[in-house]
Amino acid sequence: MLFVPGDSERKLAKAISSPADALIVDLEDSVSPSRTHIAREMVLEYLRSRPRHQRQGQQIWVRINALTSPAALHDLAVVTGSPDGIVLPKVRSSQDVVRLAHYLDALESREGATTGSIRILPVTTETPRSLFTLGGYEGCSPRLTGLTWGAEDIAAALGASNNRRPDGEYEMVYQLARALCLAGAAAANIQPIDTIFADFGDSTGLEIEANAARQAGFTGKLAVHPNQIDIINRAFTPSDEEVVWSQRVVDVFARNPGMGVIGLDGRMVDMPHLKRAQQILALAASLHGTDEAG
View 1 (cartoon, rainbow, N blue to C red):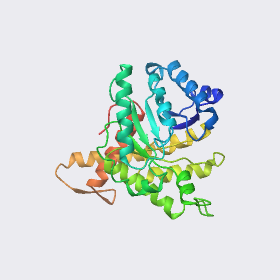
View 2 (cartoon, helix red, strand yellow):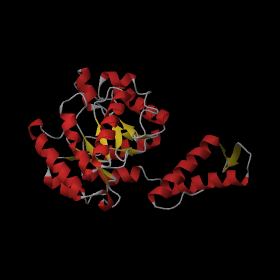
View 3 (cartoon, one colour):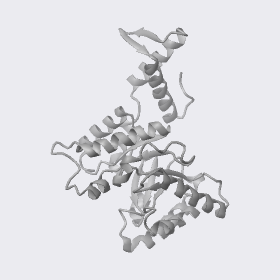
View 4 (cartoon, rainbow, N blue to C red):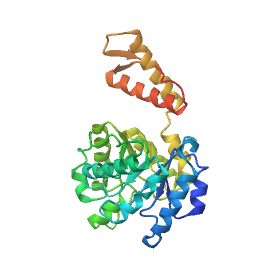
């Protein structure tokens, strides 16, 4: 998911050709408050110029301002352009998602749009209070499609001068925020999306962080520059070796119905291995546009 400033005509035009699965057209942090009204008009025009049936698989989301800001309701004028989803920053709890969902219900009704067609992705760790509420998103709204997290705003809120150690690893509180986002998404049975890697010139660091995120359980990652997209896509695409091994795990259980533990190539595999193998095959199938394997 690639962030694009909502007030940059050049970047909006360029983003269309990027291999990102989704664009997050921004009305918040990357836009000066003095230009927010200009950005809203540009974003709405951008959405209308690319109606949903012409987006060719690349979704367009909009990050609005926080619901605690008066700007948020004005930002929701973009609903008339039928964005695929709204990214909601600086949430405090699932109640912010519920509140936004009510707004969207009313706006979709007014526009004659299908109720529930616009999804919600909250940024769940940007306020101190939010860290204590990440287990409460289950069932809060059918619009909720995932959880993501951020380490910049929470650092400012905590008064930190930096959110990373000298070795580049996150400080403990931000590791906690990341882990709670991942666990909260799993508890709510929705997608966990990893946060940005701000140093867009450090491709090696991005590759390491993206691979670690997928290994931990995240299903995608936010990007701040088009050059990051290919690296992220590679990290979250199962390798040929993973697909082959996963198919073998599925096959061996299919040949031995009723068994909970089976030896394969000198390793013991059980139900968690089977579940993971099925997930990898389903992901690979979806990325290749085929029916689920196994």
